[in-house]
Image 1 (spheres, rainbow, N blue to C red):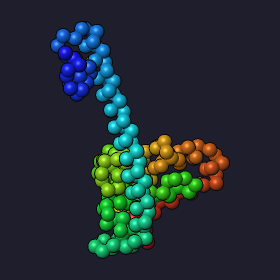
Image 2 (cartoon, rainbow, N blue to C red; image 1 turned 90 degrees about the horizontal axis):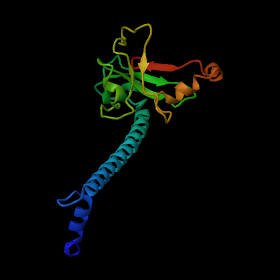
Image 3 (cartoon, rainbow, N blue to C red; image 1 turned 90 degrees about the vertical axis):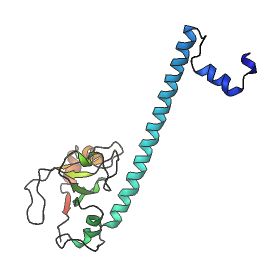
Length: 188
C-alpha cells in the first residue's frame, strides 16, 4: 500500500510522525525534524551575517563619499564639508579617524546610548551599529564636554573599533600613531 502512494505522500510519511509508527520511529522522526530546523536556522544566521556585512561595507563607502559635500537646508553652524552627512542624519556629530587602522567613520549622538548599538547611520538594523558619543556628553556648536566618550563595536573583521583595539595594544604602534582625529560637525 505504501508504494501506491504518490512520492510526496511517501516523503511526508517518512519524515513526520504518523499514526501507527513505533515509538522508536516517532523519536527518530522528531530528532530528524529538529536537526532540519537547526540547519535552517544556522543557514539563515549565516546569510544574515553576510548580508549585514555587505550592507555595512557599502554604506561605509557611500558615507565617505559624502564627506566634503555641502547640502541645502543645513544649519549655518554645521561645517560645509559635513553638510551632506548632517542632512542624511541630523544625529551626526563628527568624523573619527584613527591613523593606521580601519577606523574612519562617522560618529553620531542620541539621547539613548543603546539606540545606535545595533543601528547603522541610516537608522536601519545592523549588527555593526554606528560609532556614537555617550548621551551624557555635550557636543554642540557652543559647548563641548572636556572628555568625549565614543562607543563602537569591536568587530572581528577589524571594522568599527576592532582593528584599533588590537593595534593600540602594541606600544610601538601607539608611539607611531599617538594622535587620533575627531572632526566635529561644527569644525570649520
